[in-house]
Image (cartoon, rainbow over all chains, first blue to last red; front, side):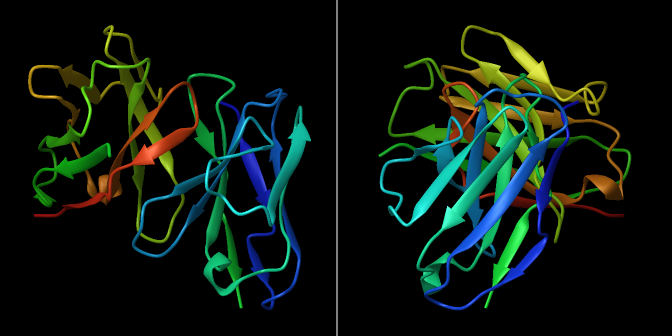
Length: 106
Length: 118
């Protein structure tokens, strides 16, 4: 299995801040990485695919980059709606695996 | 628009079989080159991919669950299903169905909580 490790597990920030979440794969996954946002009691929402492509409708304050084993998701000018848990997911192999999540809190 | 809806018992006894169905509305499950997935999330924990089915019949399972899992698709009912046998408390989770073209899951159901308890 390809292991995905996110850091940090919890991130405290203020509205207006810029934050970065990182995701590391246990082996190279090229650019086969997605990012999701999940709010309590809701299903995850796809934000980014192919490491850096924003899903339609995702605000431009979200950006993502990386390839190989190191990836990042940056949210600039945090809005109240952005406080949620974020997951990365690799799909280099059919055995999809997710990171453990990063909770972004005020 | 296309929607997914999970359904099935919310309570399953230990050692029994968990059975869930994901109904697709707004589009034919056979249209497009989509994989139809099952994912679960124990309370307060992360996401675990269970498996996926392609309408051509191709099925992939998470090896950690493969011996207990069966995923199938019913194009006549426009749905796909999950069966998980010999459940224990560790299988208690919110179960989601999801759709993706290859890897990213761009459409999810709302999820259904399944509790394993006697």
